[in-house]
Amino acid sequence: MTAAGAASPLAPAWLEVPDDLNRLVPSLWAHDAGRGPDGQLTVAGLPVGEIKSAYGSPVFVLSEDDFRARARAFKTAFDAAFADLCGGVDVYYAGKSFLCTAVATWVREEGLRLDTASGGELAVAARAGVPGELIGLHGNNKSDAEISRALELGVGRIIVDSLDELERVAAIAAARGTDAPGAEAPRAKVMLRLTPGVHAHTHEFIATAHEDQKFGLSMAPGTASASFAGAGPDAAASMAEEAVAAAAGHDSIELLGVHCHIGSQIFEPEGFEAAAVRLLEFVAAMRSAYGVALPELDLGGGYGIAYVPGDAPRPAGEIAEALAGVVRATCDRLGIAAPRISIEPGRAIVGSTTFTLYEVGTIKDVVVDVPGAAAQDDGGTAVRRYISVDGGMSDNARPVLYDADYSVVLANRTSSAPAQLARVVGKHCESGDIVVRDAYLPADVRAGDLLAVPGTGAYCWALSSNYNYLTRPGVLAVRDGAARWIVRGETEEDLLSRDMGA
Image 1: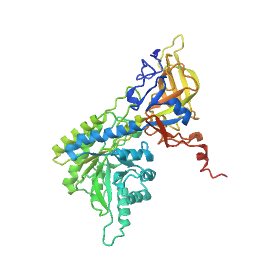
Image 2: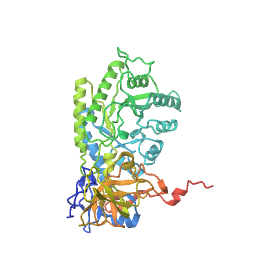
Image 3: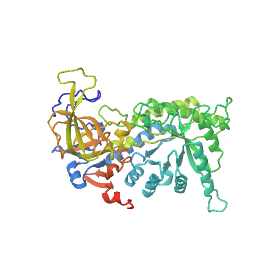
Image 4: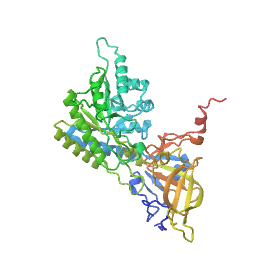
């Protein structure tokens, strides 16, 4: 048991001094992470010391079994909750969170489908052998080449984001033709992304359902083009209604249904439920106004994970039951059959499967003023410890982008030293290069120690960069005590390979 030590006046209100700095909070880690007999952090039985010796640092360490278990949990829970409504749920893994050919393969093997958001992500899906009908293509500004590639692959859905894009998809699909005499060209399978105006309690930059942002077709009355009157008596049609009418009028489009995504890292259920109600009401209205059936409804993703001990994400089964209850009640009220439901978890599957392993370099104690402190004998100051590691914002940009909080543990050993408030920072030439803004670590952390930051499976590797010409870390998959690269780390030769010289 580690001595707790005194709370620092510099610590945020939510951060408590742990009773035991060596304990791993289960909600933050893969299910097969633990401490070995010698105190080392292990994953699937493999100690971090062996990982460091064989693969270096920084490195992303991913539990394959944990990834598969979380993927299965979503598929199993949602299929069960919606079985009587629509025969189950199509679960699309949101590849933008983290994607490589191994992950795409696991997704398919566990019965999930795959969302992509670019031509590059489509290329990964194709290399992994994911059948086209199990792939979706997102994006607010798809190129003609990306649309054409999606049609060539026979993707199961193109999620259209604007009226302009709808017309381009229709034209590209119509121009493809067919080699078989007298046969009709395959139609583009389209879903319309709508903005339901539901506020999710999340960071402004990852909230995606309000009107003033780049994604989706507005559901607000009066947002349709001036030339579109709509079917309602007051002619106050929405952009979303105009898109439905336009899609229904194109022979080259097969309109599957509608889609929404209200944001990311969301814990509260009310936002998802409100969005489901709004979209189901829209489905019913489109059938009444235009006789257009919308047989599919995608409720997106955004389910949160735990980054710090106080975070309380909902289990997949609880999310599924809550959404199924709202869909059931709303369809009964509207007198419509439930559409086929799909969802798009990404972070909720991969986020907690992974931790980043760093090596400690320099350590510096800085005396700073305590905010709001009255003048005292010590001048109202306290010590903040800065612990620098061998990575930083190039492997985790989320703290600087979203003010994201993370946790951290001493990984290569246990300690009985008292707790010391620390700020874990990277090695980049930026004062905002912060990996973990506030955390309690043992006071005897020293150069050469290993630190592990959990919850880095989503958006960390995906957002990684070569700032300051650092090489991007690789991703190790660990299973049954053995590790293998699923994305190798970069080398300096990789960095220089695209430099064309003088």
